[in-house]
Length: 132
Image 1 (cartoon, rainbow, N blue to C red):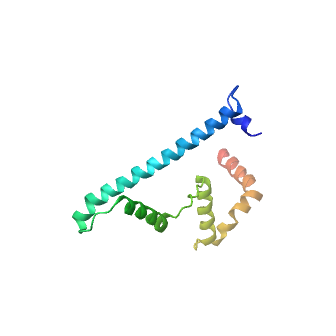
Image 2 (spheres, rainbow, N blue to C red; image 1 turned 90 degrees about the vertical axis):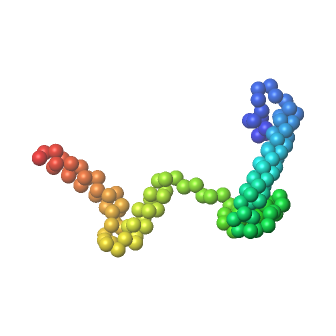
């Protein structure tokens, strides 16, 4: 049932399935090609730089691939980074400031004040300033 959403005008189900299989195979081939390229770049850089600088031995392609995987596990893990909206970062900073800032504990009530009385007070303040 969902397949008809992705089908092009007049495309049969067989053509759709063949197109999906073809794109999947191309995606796998592309991922393997990028992995091979990345592995060979690491081998080239290591073998060019490390023996000369630190007297280390040269490495093979598979040693470079294992090194990349090990570095990913140690430094980055395999989960995707959480993408935050800039507004969320600001709100979390604001909450930390109001909650933990030692200079004035009254600030934690600011949001409640603004919701209850702030807008009216602000409008009164603006009218008073405009009259001056």
